[in-house]
Structure formats: C-alpha cells, structure tokens
Image (tube, rainbow, N blue to C red; front, side, top):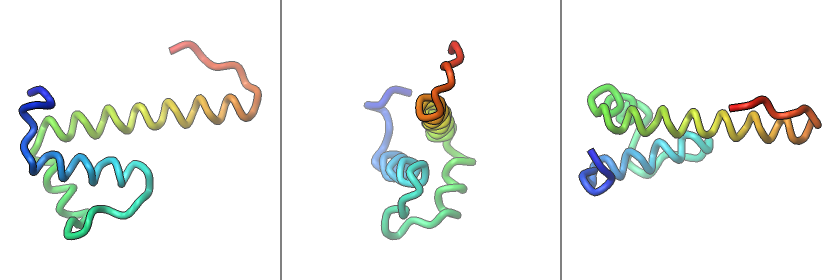
Length: 75
C-alpha cells in the first residue's frame, strides 16, 4: 500500500501516532484505546508506527551520544 492508498481514516490515526511519539495530546475525539484498536487491525499503520518509533529511538540515541561526547556507533 502506498501513501496515496491510505484512506482518510488512516491519516487521522497516523496523526495520532505522530502526536503519541512526541508525547503530545492525541487529536480531539480519539482515545488511546481507539488508536490501539486501529493498530491491531491495520497492518500498514502498525508498520508506519514501528518505523516512526525506530526513527525516534535512533534520533534520540544519536542526540544523547552527541551531548555526552560519545562516538556514534555504526548503523
């Protein structure tokens, strides 16, 4: 499934996934339970969420290493 194939419903959930990753409030009218339910039923959003989480963790790790002066480990 490409980005063009993602329905309006998934765009709403991907906005929520992004907010969640940034520790920001979820969009109005959407609960954590709604997001969890969608992620259990939508493989594409689950994959997107996993990629975002990996990117966030990698970025956070690089920033921590940069601040501490530790050399970056190869990817």
